[in-house]
Image (cartoon, rainbow, N blue to C red; front, side, top):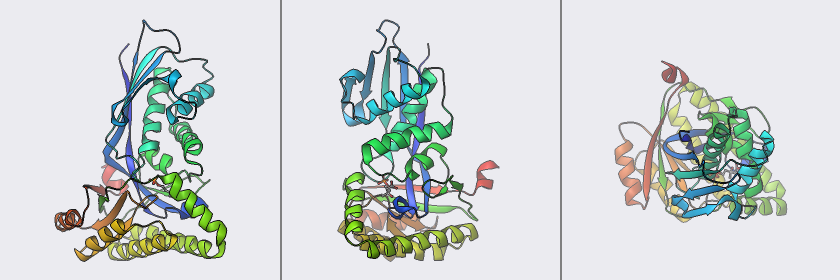
Length: 320
Ligand code: PMV
């Protein structure tokens, strides 16, 4: 039997992180320059249930049965087998690789779940449709991360720019023109679940203030959707800066992220903000194709450890 493989991209949140957990809208786009990949090879000589996992990027080489029950891979396998009403995995070897930086706001966990869910369900002869794959990745995030909004698994599964609100069908984002974004890594790892939990505790202790901040972020995101649809990039940049300020007030920024945001705007970016959970991870800068290299250099001088340039295209460009 040939090997079965599947992959999924990374993602960035352009607007609305954190507020999206509380029911406000968000805008997220796939980042196809980085990917998670899963390959499954049948082991005809092995016993039923014998699954060997090899994930070199996180230095994990183990049998599925040796993983603790709350490990994301264990949760994914058991929830997938439950859904397909299959008692045990046929013997196989699973290799998981990823070029998406871990704990950096680029959706590495959800991308691994999506790639793995697709590969295993195909290997079992029941390839799952996207809505089920997205839900499977959401269940893993829920058990592992506590209170995810669902934006990561959605944008990564469907691999298209989305306008997303918790509990509602996502909308495909309409763009008038392509948008070029630089994604710069602060080099600091950050735990999404911890930052989301800290925001929850702060919200519980002063819900009036935090609800106001979520409201502001929600309004910025709604306006951003309109500016993206109209191609008004300068105004979009100003909204990014406002969104960063609101995230700073939420307490999820970090001096390194603020420094990178300032470096990008000083070098001519239309706007910049942290992206994802914050307190480390990545930031994004909205640039033009002709100033991208200059802004990239400024970000590197200001301490960025890695830069990814990504271009978000209107649907018509992708279809033609
Ligand atoms: O750090 P990331 O890429 O996992 O993004 C988290 C985004 C939050 O809005 C903070 C949480 C969520 O589940 O939407």
